[in-house]
Length: 128
Image (cartoon, rainbow, N blue to C red):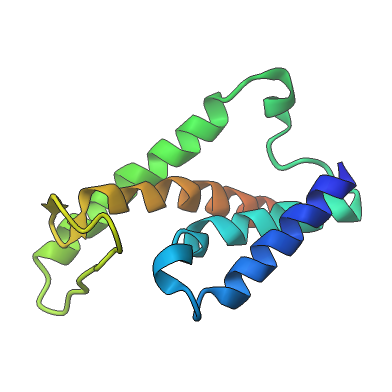
């Protein structure tokens, strides 16, 4: 519904605007807010849902997209861990049990990343 879309838009936008002030508390919005914003914009514009199968309780596509991103993320982090020019993550509250240079719970960020990739791809795809 449009009302929920407006609320999601406001919360995601507010969170992103406050992330510099409260980075340790709002860092998950780096992964969650982009997909939330895109989905809210489409709902407000009256476009079709990005994941219409969810209306029927079918979560298979969502799980596949999230799992695909997680698998890619593990590959990327493996390459990063052995790279000369690598990046090191420090994730507040969960910086334990590192796998390569990423804390184990940090890999959860790849799950919404997979959904965001699908939302962006769907947004760019021409509708015929």
